[in-house]
Image (cartoon, rainbow, N blue to C red; front, side):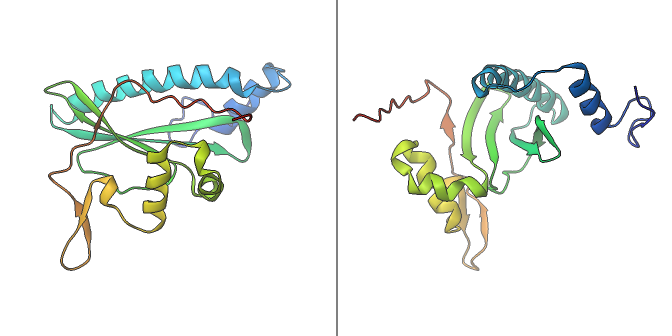
Length: 183
């Protein structure tokens, strides 16, 4: 449909062209958020499992971290970008990230943190009773640049470095919180 090709891979169209063509071919008026959630969760698990396999090979069985960064594009409102970033070092806590620690030898995957986008934080703090207590505590700590709960420790010089004795949270049964507007 288009002659615009990617500068990174001349064998394919640009992301904008692919998005535009998909919008023209699929005339869905709107997407319900609930419809997206099921697909997003399943694809998140698939992407996480794929990243664990890739990271284990890439880092030759060494421990590593996976940072999940998802964002919407203002010019492509029906599009969501998910990046799975694998590193050998503990990432710096940034907004809009979900981080896991992987120990390939034992098959252990641990949850490090999940921070919302900075633009959502103030509303979450104002309605803190509606959200998980751990997330609210982490938002407060992040805003105060107190990185202890993210597995960092402050040196005598005042610099934050990874705490080598820190143990991240084991993945397990999700905590559910049922809220009712009637009490």
